[in-house]
Image (tube, rainbow, N blue to C red):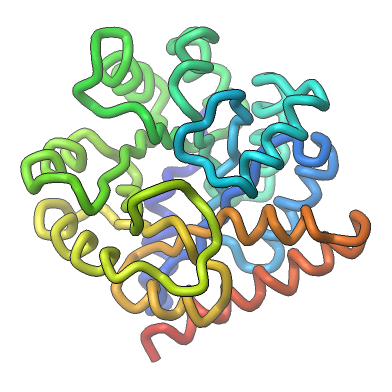
Length: 273
């Protein structure tokens, strides 16, 4: 049975007058058990929705920080079974948990098989950065059908370069929330947030009542507050991974991860005061 839709976390955050904090972390980094521990620290410190990355050898969207973590996970032998084990452990906390992955590993694993296994692990859905709803047969429509069968969210992306027509098509095929990439380029913490985010959120919300989460570049509470002022969700990834990469040891890394998460959670709570 699949986990709760990510929509439940957005609705709860909205009832509290704030945006949801969404945290990305790759499975298997630096190893499976430590990765699970890291994500649980993020949940305990204020993350509302967890995105678990499926490490992949040919990432087109990932910046150097996430690439380094994914490479370490792959060298450690992480497989889709480990990703699903991570989903099961995190979903057991009650937080909506989705997988973020490029499409090729899912295509090779089997679309229907992956949907069934993700739902069985308690996962809530899938973010597919390189898959659009109108992808070739075997892609977008196959995933939409499998997700429907197993009651999973399907989260597609919109970007500043998306036309209004593509935003309308993409949001119509989405469930749970819409992922808005705030900058053009790869992932990575940045000193300043993108001024392209707010117009993109406005264009997206004009054609859907789904929540809109903004990703790419947020690294501290002040930036989370800035994005949380107009977005329904603030997505953070590279800053979490970098904190663990730079930790002197696992204990120090987990402690720093909790501190960072608390700062980000405070940011989304003071955005609309």
